[in-house]
Amino acid sequence: MATKKRQSVDFNEIWNTQTDMEVTQDKWNSIFHNRKEPWNCSDGKKKVGCKECDFIKEHGIDTKNNSFILSVIGDVHANIKALRAHASKNLHSVLAVGDLCIYTTEDEAKKDKQSYTKNTKAINSFIAEVSNKQIQPFTVPVKSILGNHDNFINLHNEVYDQLKLSYVENGTVLKIGNMVIATLGGIFSPKKISWKTSALHEYNKRFFTQEDIDKLLAAVEDLDVDVLITHQAPAEVLPTMASNVDEGSLHLTKLLKEINPRYLIHGHHHTEYQTMYNDTQVFGLGNFKLNNNTFINFNILTGEVIYQNN
Image 1: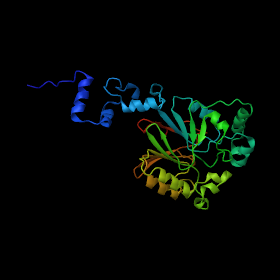
Image 2: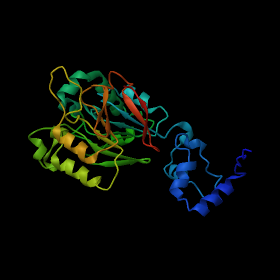
Image 3: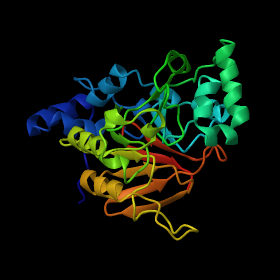
Image 4: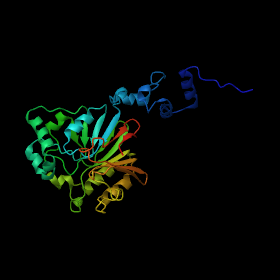
């Protein structure tokens, strides 16, 4: 005769069983916390609080409105209208891979002649907002690493504060939700790589240095990195280009190997692709200016990709 399986009559009985078996709090959370749908967690039914839910509340993450989503976007190139529209979605925050091309004055913009020539109308439109004191802030915070077309004359200013925009210095580790994100902006120069970072002024700041790399490696020494974000690609990951030249940097390849993150995301080359490099899933982002679907969304509670365009 088959034995009928008995089910627990209440949640407290499960908790008592957990206590008897000496199940750890982390194990308890992994079983009962709903990481995919945190708004449906079993918090409140237990005798003790849920560590994951406590973290969510402490950081002010609104899971019911999907604001547990971090969106990583490609090169904006002054398309502030598209960036505003994207940031108005139900997100926790936006992280750009550089080349925002957002300037506060015409003099600043003209320092980057190539960017200003290509994006004159969009750049001047924002400068007019600044002049008329009609700045429309982003709905959620927007952070960006350094590209090679950014406002290196004035990276940190009151206008950006009002806009809810901030630039991330090279070698910085961001902790967003449960995610650990290592950042290194800029592009490679065989001359500037050996310079002191402090010796780079104005548009020389578009280059990264070995000092920046060493700073990042020291910062992540005891951390498991979820995402490494760079502006330029490492060598050996890009698809074959029309020029048949690998436009990536071997210094970034070495960095990628040493950090061994779960994901690598870069911009700069305006090439949308994904591939694997050893254990790392690599995403190249295209030009957000031309395609505002060029982004990847992460669940900041699980570190998992929940949207990718490519």
